Length: 256
Image (cartoon, rainbow, N blue to C red; front, top):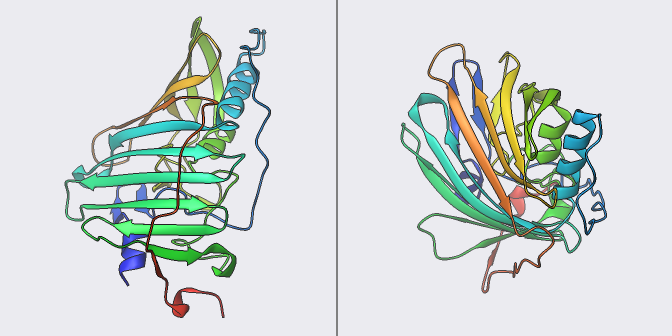
Protein backbone atom coordinates (compact mmCIF):
# COMPACT_ATOMS: atom_id res chain seq x y z
CA UNK A 1 0.00 0.00 0.00
CA UNK A 2 2.99 2.32 -0.32
CA UNK A 3 1.50 3.81 -3.47
CA UNK A 4 -1.60 5.10 -1.70
CA UNK A 5 0.44 6.33 1.24
CA UNK A 6 2.56 8.34 -1.20
CA UNK A 7 -0.56 10.07 -2.47
CA UNK A 8 -2.24 10.44 0.91
CA UNK A 9 -0.20 13.29 2.33
CA UNK A 10 -2.71 14.14 5.06
CA UNK A 11 -5.32 12.22 7.02
CA UNK A 12 -6.35 14.61 9.76
CA UNK A 13 -9.21 16.79 10.86
CA UNK A 14 -8.84 20.20 12.39
CA UNK A 15 -11.82 22.33 13.36
CA UNK A 16 -13.75 22.99 10.18
CA UNK A 17 -11.02 21.65 7.95
CA UNK A 18 -10.54 18.14 6.62
CA UNK A 19 -7.24 17.46 4.92
CA UNK A 20 -6.79 14.49 2.62
CA UNK A 21 -5.02 13.66 -0.60
CA UNK A 22 -2.24 15.52 -2.43
CA UNK A 23 -1.69 17.73 -5.43
CA UNK A 24 -3.24 16.73 -8.75
CA UNK A 25 -5.55 13.98 -7.47
CA UNK A 26 -8.72 14.70 -9.39
CA UNK A 27 -10.68 13.17 -12.27
CA UNK A 28 -8.31 11.74 -14.95
CA UNK A 29 -11.03 11.55 -17.60
CA UNK A 30 -11.61 15.29 -17.80
CA UNK A 31 -9.41 17.08 -20.31
CA UNK A 32 -9.58 20.78 -21.06
CA UNK A 33 -7.48 22.55 -23.65
CA UNK A 34 -5.18 25.39 -22.60
CA UNK A 35 -6.08 29.00 -23.10
CA UNK A 36 -4.26 30.98 -25.76
CA UNK A 37 -1.15 32.69 -24.43
CA UNK A 38 -1.17 36.43 -25.03
CA UNK A 39 2.06 38.26 -25.82
CA UNK A 40 1.07 41.45 -24.02
CA UNK A 41 -0.84 42.17 -20.85
CA UNK A 42 -4.54 42.96 -21.41
CA UNK A 43 -5.54 46.54 -20.65
CA UNK A 44 -7.38 47.00 -17.33
CA UNK A 45 -11.11 47.60 -17.52
CA UNK A 46 -13.77 48.73 -15.06
CA UNK A 47 -14.69 45.06 -14.54
CA UNK A 48 -12.12 44.35 -11.81
CA UNK A 49 -13.30 40.81 -11.10
CA UNK A 50 -13.33 40.06 -14.81
CA UNK A 51 -9.77 41.37 -15.17
CA UNK A 52 -8.53 39.17 -12.32
CA UNK A 53 -10.33 36.06 -13.53
CA UNK A 54 -8.90 36.62 -17.02
CA UNK A 55 -5.38 36.95 -15.56
CA UNK A 56 -5.81 33.72 -13.57
CA UNK A 57 -7.12 31.79 -16.56
CA UNK A 58 -4.38 33.21 -18.79
CA UNK A 59 -1.68 32.27 -16.29
CA UNK A 60 -2.99 28.73 -15.86
CA UNK A 61 -3.31 28.24 -19.61
CA UNK A 62 0.43 28.29 -20.33
CA UNK A 63 3.43 26.35 -19.06
CA UNK A 64 4.70 27.65 -15.73
CA UNK A 65 6.42 26.73 -12.50
CA UNK A 66 5.05 27.23 -9.03
CA UNK A 67 5.93 26.99 -5.35
CA UNK A 68 3.61 26.79 -2.37
CA UNK A 69 3.96 27.11 1.38
CA UNK A 70 1.37 27.37 4.10
CA UNK A 71 -0.07 26.34 7.41
CA UNK A 72 -2.32 23.34 7.94
CA UNK A 73 -4.53 22.20 10.81
CA UNK A 74 -3.05 20.68 13.97
CA UNK A 75 0.23 22.55 13.71
CA UNK A 76 1.32 21.15 10.36
CA UNK A 77 2.91 23.03 7.47
CA UNK A 78 3.05 22.24 3.78
CA UNK A 79 5.64 23.22 1.19
CA UNK A 80 5.92 22.19 -2.42
CA UNK A 81 7.21 22.95 -5.87
CA UNK A 82 6.07 21.92 -9.30
CA UNK A 83 5.68 22.57 -12.99
CA UNK A 84 2.65 22.37 -15.28
CA UNK A 85 2.42 22.45 -19.07
CA UNK A 86 -1.25 22.13 -20.15
CA UNK A 87 -0.49 22.03 -23.87
CA UNK A 88 2.10 19.24 -23.73
CA UNK A 89 0.31 17.61 -20.80
CA UNK A 90 3.27 17.54 -18.46
CA UNK A 91 2.98 17.87 -14.68
CA UNK A 92 5.43 17.50 -11.81
CA UNK A 93 5.10 18.15 -8.10
CA UNK A 94 6.99 17.53 -4.88
CA UNK A 95 5.09 18.08 -1.63
CA UNK A 96 6.32 17.93 1.97
CA UNK A 97 4.21 18.10 5.11
CA UNK A 98 6.01 18.79 8.40
CA UNK A 99 4.99 19.00 12.04
CA UNK A 100 2.04 17.42 13.79
CA UNK A 101 1.44 13.69 14.10
CA UNK A 102 1.52 12.76 10.42
CA UNK A 103 4.50 14.26 8.57
CA UNK A 104 4.90 13.02 5.00
CA UNK A 105 6.47 13.78 1.66
CA UNK A 106 6.33 12.55 -1.91
CA UNK A 107 6.72 13.36 -5.58
CA UNK A 108 4.53 12.89 -8.62
CA UNK A 109 5.10 13.10 -12.37
CA UNK A 110 2.25 12.91 -14.88
CA UNK A 111 2.73 12.72 -18.64
CA UNK A 112 -0.49 12.30 -20.57
CA UNK A 113 -2.22 9.30 -18.98
CA UNK A 114 0.93 7.97 -17.31
CA UNK A 115 1.36 8.86 -13.64
CA UNK A 116 4.46 8.15 -11.55
CA UNK A 117 4.60 8.48 -7.76
CA UNK A 118 7.39 8.09 -5.24
CA UNK A 119 7.18 8.54 -1.46
CA UNK A 120 10.08 10.21 0.32
CA UNK A 121 12.83 7.76 1.16
CA UNK A 122 11.98 5.39 -1.69
CA UNK A 123 14.37 5.02 -4.62
CA UNK A 124 11.93 3.56 -7.12
CA UNK A 125 8.93 5.22 -8.73
CA UNK A 126 5.60 3.44 -9.29
CA UNK A 127 3.81 3.80 -12.64
CA UNK A 128 0.01 4.13 -12.73
CA UNK A 129 -2.02 3.89 -15.95
CA UNK A 130 -4.63 6.64 -15.49
CA UNK A 131 -6.84 5.08 -18.18
CA UNK A 132 -7.47 2.18 -15.80
CA UNK A 133 -8.01 4.12 -12.56
CA UNK A 134 -11.47 4.17 -10.99
CA UNK A 135 -13.27 7.44 -11.68
CA UNK A 136 -14.01 7.98 -7.98
CA UNK A 137 -10.56 7.02 -6.66
CA UNK A 138 -9.55 10.00 -4.47
CA UNK A 139 -5.85 9.15 -4.49
CA UNK A 140 -4.86 7.95 -7.97
CA UNK A 141 -7.07 9.94 -10.33
CA UNK A 142 -5.81 13.09 -12.04
CA UNK A 143 -7.57 16.06 -13.66
CA UNK A 144 -5.71 17.78 -16.48
CA UNK A 145 -8.25 20.59 -16.41
CA UNK A 146 -7.19 21.66 -12.91
CA UNK A 147 -4.23 19.77 -11.44
CA UNK A 148 -3.15 22.59 -9.13
CA UNK A 149 -6.57 23.71 -7.90
CA UNK A 150 -6.23 27.15 -9.51
CA UNK A 151 -9.36 26.81 -11.62
CA UNK A 152 -11.46 25.88 -8.58
CA UNK A 153 -9.99 28.79 -6.64
CA UNK A 154 -10.83 31.17 -9.49
CA UNK A 155 -14.44 29.96 -9.50
CA UNK A 156 -14.67 30.57 -5.75
CA UNK A 157 -13.86 34.31 -5.95
CA UNK A 158 -16.78 36.35 -4.62
CA UNK A 159 -15.50 39.94 -4.56
CA UNK A 160 -12.43 41.82 -5.84
CA UNK A 161 -10.89 45.27 -5.44
CA UNK A 162 -7.88 46.62 -7.32
CA UNK A 163 -5.64 48.05 -4.59
CA UNK A 164 -2.64 48.85 -6.79
CA UNK A 165 -1.56 48.70 -10.44
CA UNK A 166 -0.68 44.99 -10.04
CA UNK A 167 -2.47 44.07 -6.82
CA UNK A 168 -5.92 42.64 -6.23
CA UNK A 169 -7.58 41.92 -2.88
CA UNK A 170 -10.91 40.33 -2.18
CA UNK A 171 -12.76 37.40 -0.67
CA UNK A 172 -13.39 33.85 -1.83
CA UNK A 173 -15.48 30.90 -0.66
CA UNK A 174 -13.07 28.23 0.64
CA UNK A 175 -15.78 25.54 0.76
CA UNK A 176 -14.88 23.54 -2.33
CA UNK A 177 -17.61 22.37 -4.67
CA UNK A 178 -18.72 18.88 -3.58
CA UNK A 179 -16.00 19.17 -0.88
CA UNK A 180 -13.23 18.74 -3.46
CA UNK A 181 -9.91 20.12 -2.24
CA UNK A 182 -8.36 23.11 -4.02
CA UNK A 183 -6.21 24.69 -1.30
CA UNK A 184 -3.36 25.39 -1.03
CA UNK A 185 -3.19 26.27 -4.74
CA UNK A 186 -0.43 24.05 -6.13
CA UNK A 187 -0.85 21.38 -3.46
CA UNK A 188 -4.61 20.97 -3.09
CA UNK A 189 -5.03 18.95 0.06
CA UNK A 190 -7.52 20.77 2.30
CA UNK A 191 -11.26 20.39 2.14
CA UNK A 192 -12.91 23.30 3.92
CA UNK A 193 -16.24 22.68 5.60
CA UNK A 194 -18.24 25.63 6.92
CA UNK A 195 -15.40 28.13 6.75
CA UNK A 196 -16.65 31.70 6.09
CA UNK A 197 -15.66 33.91 3.17
CA UNK A 198 -11.91 34.41 3.40
CA UNK A 199 -9.48 37.11 2.22
CA UNK A 200 -6.94 36.82 -0.59
CA UNK A 201 -4.26 39.00 -2.16
CA UNK A 202 -3.12 38.38 -5.73
CA UNK A 203 -0.20 40.10 -7.45
CA UNK A 204 0.53 40.21 -11.18
CA UNK A 205 3.61 41.41 -13.04
CA UNK A 206 3.75 44.12 -15.69
CA UNK A 207 2.84 41.56 -18.37
CA UNK A 208 -0.32 40.57 -16.53
CA UNK A 209 0.88 37.14 -15.38
CA UNK A 210 -0.19 36.08 -11.89
CA UNK A 211 2.94 35.82 -9.73
CA UNK A 212 1.56 35.47 -6.18
CA UNK A 213 -1.64 34.19 -4.55
CA UNK A 214 -1.98 34.58 -0.78
CA UNK A 215 -5.03 33.32 1.11
CA UNK A 216 -6.04 33.23 4.77
CA UNK A 217 -8.37 30.74 6.44
CA UNK A 218 -9.86 31.03 9.92
CA UNK A 219 -11.00 27.64 11.28
CA UNK A 220 -13.60 27.43 14.01
CA UNK A 221 -10.87 26.21 16.37
CA UNK A 222 -7.16 26.72 15.95
CA UNK A 223 -5.06 29.58 14.61
CA UNK A 224 -5.46 31.39 11.31
CA UNK A 225 -3.89 29.55 8.37
CA UNK A 226 -1.93 31.50 5.76
CA UNK A 227 -1.05 29.96 2.38
CA UNK A 228 1.05 31.54 -0.37
CA UNK A 229 1.59 30.27 -3.92
CA UNK A 230 4.05 31.87 -6.32
CA UNK A 231 4.07 31.35 -10.08
CA UNK A 232 6.94 31.99 -12.50
CA UNK A 233 8.26 31.24 -15.98
CA UNK A 234 4.92 31.76 -17.72
CA UNK A 235 5.04 30.49 -21.28
CA UNK A 236 8.55 29.09 -20.97
CA UNK A 237 9.16 25.39 -21.67
CA UNK A 238 9.25 23.07 -18.68
CA UNK A 239 11.19 19.82 -18.79
CA UNK A 240 9.28 16.90 -17.28
CA UNK A 241 10.52 13.44 -18.22
CA UNK A 242 9.28 10.00 -17.18
CA UNK A 243 11.37 8.48 -14.38
CA UNK A 244 13.74 5.73 -15.44
CA UNK A 245 13.12 2.17 -14.28
CA UNK A 246 9.67 2.72 -12.74
CA UNK A 247 7.82 -0.30 -11.36
CA UNK A 248 4.22 -1.07 -12.28
CA UNK A 249 1.31 -0.62 -9.90
CA UNK A 250 -0.44 -3.80 -8.78
CA UNK A 251 -3.68 -4.73 -10.56
CA UNK A 252 -5.80 -4.23 -7.43
CA UNK A 253 -5.30 -0.48 -7.75
CA UNK A 254 -7.28 -0.47 -10.97
CA UNK A 255 -10.92 -0.63 -11.96
CA UNK A 256 -11.91 -4.21 -12.76
